[in-house]
Amino acid sequence: MKAKRAWLTYAIITTLFWGVWGALIEVPQKAGFPPTLGYIVWSLTMIPCALVALYLIDWKVETDKRSIFLGSTVGLLGAGGQLLLFEALREGPAYIIFPFISLYPTLTILLSVLFLKEKTSLLKWIGIAIALAAIFFLSYQEPGASDKRGYLWLALALLVFVAWGVQAYVMKFSNETMKAESIFFYMTITALLVAPLALFMTDFSQPINWGFKGPYLAAMIQVLNAIGALTLVYALRYGKAIIVVPMTGLAPVITIVLSLILYAVLPGTMLTIGLVLAVIAMFILSLE
Image (cartoon, rainbow, N blue to C red; front, side):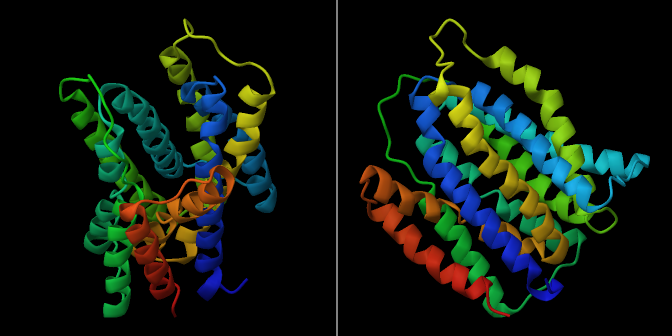
């Protein structure tokens, strides 16, 4: 695969896999398998992906302190952000939290321009701006009745926004001196280390589905997320963060299309605007 176009191939794979994952992830949750346990299953699905990655580099992982720190930082920011998101959704309204967090690529872009000195054409900047607008619209949710109070959720949402925005930047920065496979290996280790926190956050007073539609179906779905995470590391090895991250953030396009097919859910005005903007953005960002 030519490096010039490799980033696009990996970015498309990430977008497709995360999009399908997004459309199916609620199936085990609605069947009675809580998302906190879903996180634990996801961390376990990272293992086979990590083994494949390590096989590709003959099991030669960077073990110097700098590499361990950078790889672990990427993993902790991603995993920690996910757990903070669970708590934010318990405390606050999803229709505000998701659109806000979805704009984390703006932080990645800012950091990449300031510290990695990434540059691109005016047309690509237009595509990036359209992609960010599309991500916002695609993440919009209708307000629902809620008796939740306080502003703890806002602080938690801000932490998730920062964690994921910085994670993508560090992932790109790490790729300058580390193998992508090593980065993913440390992401896997840290995801597993954080898993006990997810277990602690689980409400075991509620009934939990331990059948096929519980952990087993969750594993089949979560492996899509794990593969997407691996290909994202590869996409950032070959491509610019200011382009790759906004592009992979358009995964909800796939989610909405599949939801339309599987659940007969018609997109509203906000989602329709997001879909149109996403198509335009993907076309612009994929141009060489």
